[in-house]
Structure formats: C-alpha cells, structure tokens
Length: 251
Image 1 (cartoon, rainbow, N blue to C red):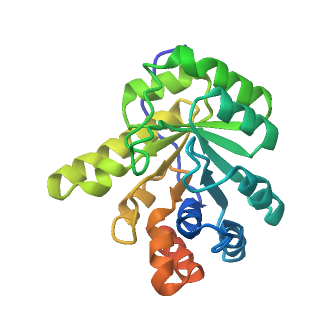
Image 2: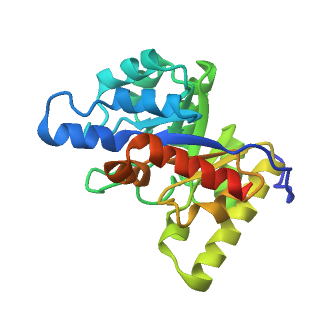
C-alpha cells in the first residue's frame, strides 16, 4: 500500500443515518413488542433520513436478530449494520446482506461503544472478515479513532469507508474541543484524499453537530442516542427534522 497522501476533496450533501438501537432498548426494558424499532425506521424514511443504523450486539441488549429482516422489509433506506468482528456476526451479515456493515469494537461491560476499533493492531483478525463482507457486496466501514495510523490500516484492509469516532470531541470543552475538531477534520481530509469515504458519529447533539457537519469531506453522520432521547419530548419526526436542518445549515 502506498504512503498516505495529505489533501482534501470538495463538499457535498451530508447524509444523515439514524441509529434506532435505543428504541429497541426501551422495548426490551419491558419485553414485548412496543415501541417497535421498525416503526422508528419508517418514520426516519418518511422525514428524509438517508439511512438506518442498527447495532446487533452479541448480548442482544437492544436490536434483536428478527428486527433486521423486518427493518429491511419496511423501508427502502439502506441498512448499516454495526457489528463486532466475530464469526457469528459475520454469518448474520452474510445472511441478511445489509447495504453496509460497520465493524465496531465491543465489550460486554460497556454501556455503549467506547472508543474506536484498533484496525492497525487487529489487521490479521479483520482482514478475512472485511474480505468476506466485500465479496458479498456489503460495503465495509471501520469505526475508528481519527488517527493517521488507523486511516492507513483501513487502506491496507481495503475498507471503502471509515466512520470517525467523535466521542472525544463531544465530551471535550474549550481548546480541547477545538483540537479534537481539527483532528477529525484533518483525518476526514486524509481519508478522502486516499480514496476512503469518511463518515463520523458518536455523541453528536444539536449543540455540537454543526462544526462537524461543516467539515467538507464528511459524507455521512450517524446519530442515534440523542435523537431518540429528544424524541421523548418532541417526537421522532421533529427530532430528525431538526438535526437535518442543522446539518444543512452547516453546509
């Protein structure tokens, strides 16, 4: 693989992928079928969302196996399946054939995905999984920290997409937040110049999304927990529409 090439590409419309995991989290708190994440997917499609993201965790704490086919049947929006790099999840992805599979780190004890995937340190483990997903026509994404070594690892693995973890940016303040934003922008430019489509997500809210959305190389933001939380107060249609408005204003 050739060396990384610094640079950037031009701006375009920024897609919004909505993660509906936490609709399922609420459902699972009581069991049964309500609230149904499929209904959430239908609402996202109706209000102009560009994709549905769902994380089928190994412990099935929110999205369940049967939800995947139901989501795919309910809407024409592309499904982005977040998954751990395991043989079980690979088999599920190959069976359901989502539009995209985003490989994420996963630990049972975490409340949510913490940090990015160490693509550089796990090359040998990830390579056959990336290859099998790609051979099946599934677009592979790697959820990584905004670091040059992780971008280079994605290049070596042949992943067409990276999703830059924005959690450090979201949790920082003042100069630390500004530094994190620069890091995300620099790595989005680096990825794009080297033929990888950069996405971003984690911890994004109405208050912090616009500086990230303004990064011209980013093609997609994936946002979930905040939108579902706001939907409790305003409804899912309104929360998605507001996020869409803020993203469009930033561009």
